[in-house]
Length: 69
Image (cartoon, rainbow, N blue to C red; front, side, top):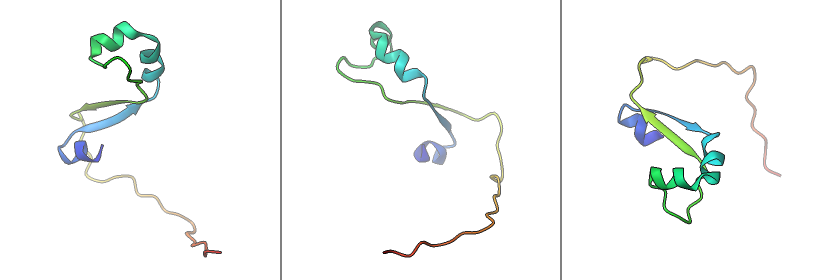
């Protein structure tokens, strides 16, 4: 996903697709997924329609460090 962003692409993971693909072998064949492979995540890529200059700025009320035991 980082490499895609560096190329100007947007990306997101789709969690609902793998269960469908795992149960539909003809669809896997049509998509070029080799037999014996189990889809576990779907990643979609594309050029974003909207470009943002800044991300959302978050403020944390407190950030602490837990000392090692």
